[in-house]
Image (cartoon, rainbow over all chains, first blue to last red; front, side, top):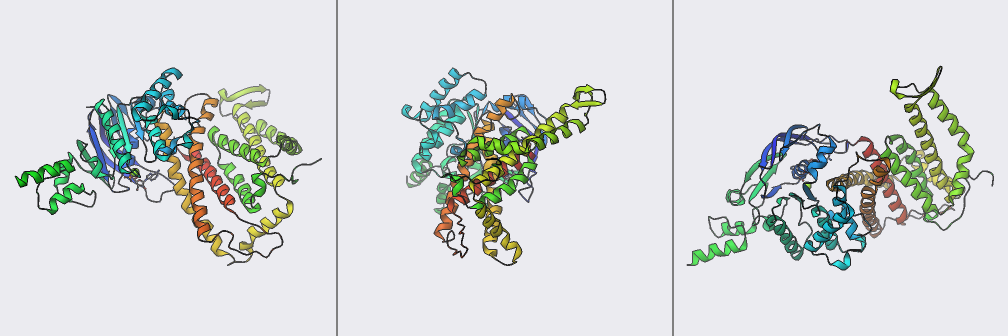
Length: 274
Length: 269
Ligand SMILES: Nc1ncnc2c1ncn2[C@@H]1O[C@H](COP(=O)(O)OP(=O)(O)O)[C@@H](O)[C@H]1O
Ligand SMILES: [Mg+2]
């Protein structure tokens, strides 16, 4: 067991948002090596869940156990930094976090903050830039002159530079075309194979459902299902989550099974024909 | 030049091109925002902002020092009052004591803050007055006060401004907390390190925020232009005031700065 939420509540207090929102009584555990999809309607608390995982916000009540390190409402910054260095967080529009004069500087940022010296940080940054597929002649370029797609890759590299044990992604495929999605999936698969635990919030069920081994569905701050995707999508549809289009298609032609990818669907159809 | 304070110096600067109303509104709200500042971080942002405004005005810094000199004695007097009248919070707070005279570190900090507030206020006002001819300032003020004197006048524009602000503040607030989160997730810590190091942490937060605000402002300005809002009004005054795209952008950037001050003075980071 790697991360365990014990009756975690989180309440937003804000003078800008009229309605107060809370995550209620969250208890779950996340095992290392899992690839998890987090889904649910807008405003159901998915991003809040990721922020709790990265200790960017602390539980109002309850506690979270990170590999033995207990975090609660009164945990000091020093401990949080220790937990946080195990996480890489890719935000919905990661390109918006860029600020450094060059690509390399921006990717080094997290490595330097988490205690590497300049030489180590530079080495790690170059390594991850190569893995992500940013060509060497761009490393000294200004981040602000890149295309949006390249910016996003640089920002993802910036989140992965410390070889985090846990990778958090918030709507990673939003605004991406199919090529960019494929690129991203390759990167995710690569890090997953390296042993990283991946937790991805996404509406893009078609893209992610075939890859993940677990899906967690939120509704108004509560978890309403937590199971493997085949089990979840074999149940009748509800308003919280659209099943993959392969499942909808299978239903419409009267199949009882739950194919999560085109390949699975093709196999099903072939099996019928034989 | 005996009193530079309030004297117009023509330059080809960006600030010279702004609508006087933009600058008046910013000056007015700057004074209010100044009251919100309550930490090294919030003062840091305001100092950044004022320094940037001075830079954009293309006015030599000497001019600002001259402006400051005329009120320096007043500021020193205020500092002394703070210094002598602030009671130490406890024994460890006392820095120096001479008989009944006790100077505390709280008092020292308070008096420095007073001076800082004055300086920032004077600098901002100087930026307004040296980049704007006094006739434009007068026109600007009367134009701004018009809706108040004649109820029902130009309600459309007024309503639009209010609704734009109401829409922009929450959007920028969410953008900003995401940016702050993103940098914190990359190990940026606002709570550790020396003052210099902490002030440096502003850069990774403010640069992306301004870049986002800028893009949003540009889109908004274009949308308004397409719909024929900007420059669509015919003015009959002899001194024509022109609210342009650049004014909108500057106002939005100021909104961003104001927001970050309010945010940082309340947020528990
Ligand atoms: N900083 C905040 N202050 C107050 N309320 C917030 C804040 N951020 C999010 N919320 C509210 O919390 C709820 C859940 O938000 P979020 O976790 O971002 O949902 P999701 O990512 O599933 O769309 C929303 O209703 C939102 O309005
Ligand atoms: Mg979200």
